Length: 430
Image (cartoon, rainbow, N blue to C red):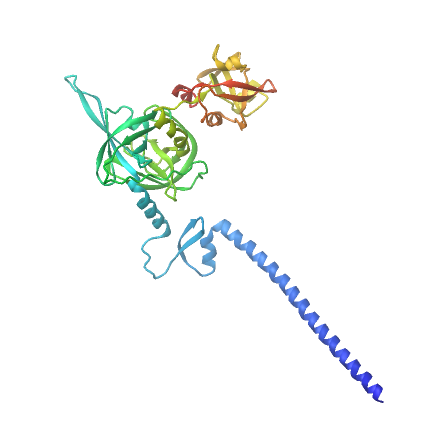
């Protein structure tokens, strides 16, 4: 009897343990299944939210959550938000950014006044005429970067600083080809110079906000705001200069802005304002700046030598077009055609071949059958702008490896470079 009782108690205990184990297993299984479902739901939600951000922006996402947003500032450390509502916000994030840039940079921008003997009156007297422009302080020892066309014909130069103090300046170096120049002033011991921060123009994006500061019509340190409207523009200025690889912007630039900085939202110079496209002489929303990377590359030469030596190929070039490729039955559709080589020149001696078949090409005469340049060193050459950029940092006398397609066969030739002139660059813009 006792044994039966013990057996029944043991069976009951086992049944209870099994029941508890089943319940616990069921709970674990339910939680695990629920966690998987929750994780999947979270991933699906994240996917939907990312789509909203991609298509409509962060403000739309915040609006869905019931948070009204006035403005968003995108920075390296994330987003800064300004909420809408009854709070008396004085400035938006975008306005604060503009104010911050101006406060940091305006003392680095100078007003350049030039005097030149150019005007002749009815008595054939040579009279002084004044010009005006802008510049940026490069260093504590008074070096200032500006446009070449601001200073190159000047008989005298005067620089006015942020504190209204004026100083005579001397020309240190000038590069007419890239429309850049360095001048220098010597200030008194009580005056502090504020060198500007130089950024890079290599990673600019169309649509990126830019800020221009200069002296249009003599109004000192005027600030205008716009965006990058285009990149890598070849531009012929009103003075007949050719600016390659220019930055196009709609930030208002007028006479007197020349030589002033084009800035990004981090207060860094990304360009030197140089020219405007206009039918009436004033800004019409198409303005151009020289990339700061171009300036950085030549400033040491301007300070040390007073000029810049650049390399070039002594050849006549033609950019390939679909029509030209089809007409000439060419074996490649990207590159630069060597129309002619200078007789007895370095390129001819190295082995580059010009064309022999003369044809009318638009308003020009070119020669087909010559080499097609497809690379300089390791840089692929698809058009004339690529050729310009590939040789931008070379000097006359340097040797470069030129890869060409010669009637379907690829050849690499070592070519010594000549001194590049403004005429060479002008030939790139037709």
